[in-house]
Structure formats: structure tokens, C-alpha cells
Length: 486
Ligand code: SF4
Ligand code: SF4
Image (cartoon, rainbow, N blue to C red):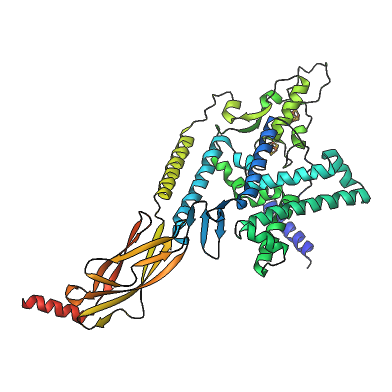
């Protein structure tokens, strides 16, 4: 039986069974709608000018940052093979995961705070997806022209002019995404090393794959996927609704003022119409192709292009601006606008506390870390003269930006058989093998706490790390017997 006849049979059975359940059984829900081309119209206005300035600043910051040096290395460098992350004067190690966790919590809280306060500010003004897609759109406008020209170009034949424009656009996209992708890799492989190695074709297999993925990912994302990523791949677009309330500042169409919408002639009686002249300009400038007049939608990235477009129209027809504007649901309903609400204050307070704790933690972070690892091959060694010896490896991590000389010492009663002065380069982890000896008479238990103190000779930094000193049970028993005899 073919699939279609099986479906028909199931359909008939469901109809016979009661009709209503038929649709429930057989309805297929499309989870993904293929992308329809959106020919966005360019618009100028205060919001778009501010947005463009911000996008240039953010993109410039991203592209320039890997070129900034700090103490002889790249200021921001994710050194994955070395398992270190350099952030200007700070070096983070895997042991500093707590700071990364704090940073992620801070980012999440900021998102909650700003979304609850003013909607999708991040999406519209700072998200890398928005930034790079906008640059790709600008390239498209430059090469193919504005909305109408692009529509005509795509509907026209594949003649020389169309091939030339399309080839130029894709070449420009590829060049731009190459610059952005290589810069991204430059955060992991120092960019001053990376570029000459790319120029001389001196990259390893893994590096070639990394560069290629970073390059082509942006080309396909910002060139072809665009708003599909926001619609289907971005989790934030899905859960932002939970952070909105009636007092969240967002972009709204003023339905009361705008409806009933309709075209009108200059000078003609329009007393039965609202302010919306139904020009569709707000739809044409929307990068996700939605109609804001249908209400708040998850596709809206809050770019404010529809505000600028509609304000232009309102000015042209002689109506007050602000038919589409930043406002709140409650203000639209005639209630008083209240931006500082308990939820915003609570998010703000938690955000401040976490940011403060993170700042204090970073400021008080010791630029030295010590791990004590005891020798597992031999728990202890009995020496002549009633001595017991334990062997350890001290892992000294110099997290500072300068070479440090450390003085290593142990608790009173223990003797360190090791060079007490150890020189460690900045950002280096040095393994220092040390033997510690103790007289059997001073040991009251088979395991005695032993503190190592590592102090910098060059800076006011010292770290105490505790290990345990092991002794044979026979020695400890002998000590106890002697005590009893006395
Ligand atoms: S731009 Fe303004 S006037 Fe034109 S359709 Fe949109 S809301 Fe109506
Ligand atoms: S509806 Fe307006 S604010 Fe939302 S994405 Fe479209 S143009 Fe931008």
C-alpha cells in the first residue's frame, strides 16, 4: 500500500470514528519554514543613525582588539593549548573557572534586566548576528541597489549585468567574512603570528579547518540564513516572552491611533480613518519581514527601523510622529507608564551584587596558585637517625605578568630538602619536587597536617597550601609506648 493510500485509509477511518479527531491525527505541523527572500528597504532616521554608529563601534572594537598588545603578548588571547585565557593584565587558568561562571551569570542577569526594562535591546543593537547581517545588507545595497532594484534584478534574466552584480556581491561577502573569520581565529592564535602564516600557507590541518569554518560560517549565516537564525536557532527569541510584562518598554504600533488604516488623498476628507495611511513602509524596512501592526511578534528583533520609516511618513502627511514608537503595553492602554517595577529593581539589585562580588573577587585574586601533589609511588621513606621522609611535587602557577622568585618553606618541625628559591616565568606552571623530613619523635599520628608556605621575593604575595605527612604505624606506636613508659 502506498503512503498516500495509507494516509487516505487512516483519514477515512478517522472520519468514520468521529470526524473531529481526524485533523488531530493527520495534521502535520511544519517546524521549519524555508526562507522567503526579504527585500529590505534602506531607511534613515535618528534610531537607524544611532544604530549604525553603534554597529560600527562594535565591529571596529571586535576587529581591532586582537591587535592590542599587553606586556609583550596579545591583550585578549584564548590560549587553548596552553589552557590559559589572557585578558589584559589578568591571566585565567582552568582553576579560575569560578570567574567564568560568574561572568556567565552576570551576562544572563544583564539580559534579564535589560529585556525586562526595555525589550530586545541586545537583539536590535548589539547581537553579533545583527551586527554582521547589517554589514552584509549594506554590501548588498551598495552592489545591487535598494529594494526595487534588487527585486527587478532577481526577477530579470541571468544576463551579464546580473551575473556581474551577483559575483561582485558574493566576492565582497566572502572577503568581508574572511576578515571577520580570521579575526575570530586571531583571538585563539595570536593574530600577528596567524596572518604571516596564512600568507605563507604555513597552517596545520586543524588550523585550516578552524579558519575555514569561521570564514564560511559567517558567509552562510549573514548572507543566506539571516533572520532564520533568529527565528529557529536563537533560544533567546523563544524565552524572551517570559521576561516581558505590560510595563516593558518595547516597539509598538499604536492601534488606537492608527486604525482604521487606509490610503487617503491629500486634501480629501479622512475623518473616518486613523493615522496609518497603509503605505506598508514599516513592513518594507523590516529586516525580518514582519508587520508590526499585527502586534508583538517573536520575529521582531527591536531594530526600530519601522519607527524611523513611519515617522518619515507621518511627517510627510502632516501627522504627529510616534504612530510606531517605544512605549509600553500599559501606556498604550492609557495607564501610567512605570519603568521601575519590583522585577526590574530585583534584577538590578542581584546584578549589582553579582557584579560587585566578581569585581572584588578579581581584585583580591592572588597572582599565585600552589598545588601540593604527594608522590604516590612511595608513601614514606625511613632514614637513618630516626628520620622519616615524604616526597611531594609543588605546582607553582605564576599568574602575574612578571617573572617571580618564590621562597618555599614548611611548618616548624619539618625540614625541606629542596632549593628554597624557585624562579617562575609569567604565566608558567613549574613543578618543583621537594623532600620533607621529620624526626620520628615529633610525629604523633600516621598522618600529620603539613603546611607549605610559598612567598614571592619580588611582591607581597604568599600562599599557604596544606598536605599531609605520612609515617609508618610502627614508629607512631613506638612513640606512644615511650610516652606511656614515662
Ligand atoms: S509606515 Fe506607518 S503609516 Fe505606513 S503602514 Fe506602517 S504604520 Fe501605517
Ligand atoms: S517590526 Fe520593526 S523593530 Fe521589529 S524587526 Fe521589524 S522593523 Fe525592526
